[in-house]
Image 1 (spheres, rainbow, N blue to C red):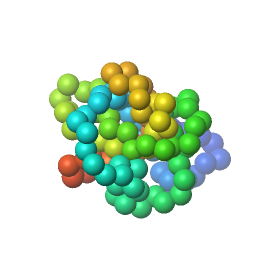
Image 2 (cartoon, rainbow, N blue to C red):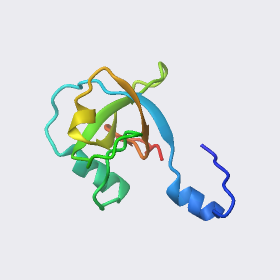
Image 3 (cartoon, one colour):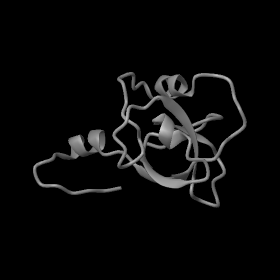
Image 4 (cartoon, one colour):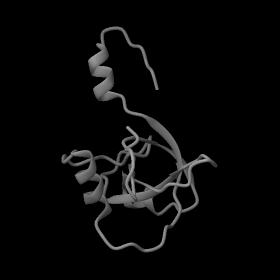
Length: 109
């Protein structure tokens, strides 16, 4: 996503504006582990996060399993979500990145 604002330098845009993705939340099989911690380890972002669902201001408590709303991509990704947003199985919504792939691969920033 490219946004142009006067007064904000290009470097700041790259740091502050991450990708926005349309995803759906499906209940993937029960997998052990702390998925929010998995996301933190992969991104190196250790500060407490707000839910990455656009329009939600709750604290991120879960590492939500999501898939891109793209028939050509069946990969699962982890994104910080509040518990309410994480329990909306089958719903489609917008999130900001980064999205961390569950089984390795490139992080979607």
